[in-house]
Image 1 (cartoon, rainbow, N blue to C red):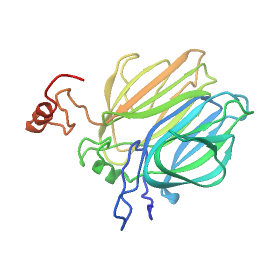
Image 2 (cartoon, rainbow, N blue to C red):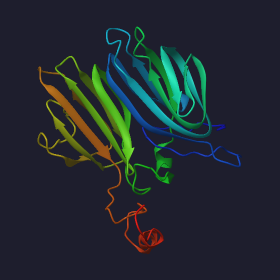
Image 3 (cartoon, rainbow, N blue to C red):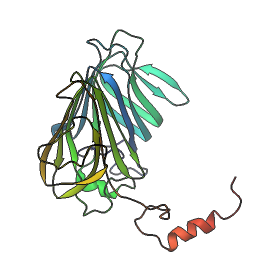
Length: 278
């Protein structure tokens, strides 16, 4: 069991070792998905040394689903401040109800989710995260090298909108979407050091006064200076909107071991796998 939780920001995949433990306890936050809940609020909470999810589907959207998927080796504790109609599913085992207190997850793949057959749900949970400086040591880090500036989401607040993020080939990918001004998004993207680049594409009214977005439906790199940048969407009009943001290393197909170069190590992987495809 980890004896200390490292402070930090939004990093979808982390691998941390317990001090003095012969084998590492690890937790990977594989994906988060929230579809149309009344209020989805994620924010960094440095005093607790982690990241906090605050999710509410009780007001009107009693059937709006959300999922938080984690993969654990060893054992990992989560602080649940409150939970109404929340369950956790463990692959191969089944699901149990979640209550306020300490939620301990052992070896396996787990999904924390709301019971959409009930009369609404609410969840307030702390999810530990590593510091931005330690993220480069993870094999699934969003940084391609220790010197790459990496932004942090200090705050994501969506009302009646779709919020989803996951890590793919070492890149953090975020998707937000909604309809009309009733679906809103307000975020704080924090670049502790910079400048750095993020990839952005959008449709509708997503905007940020401190960043230069590409044209609508054009995906392009956006330079992010150090400091806080406030991205919003769904604040005007009756049209649909969507915002896609990602960052992390770009790998070519030939870089089989994803170390940023194509060399003998990649060739060895090809030779090792030589033969008929099964």
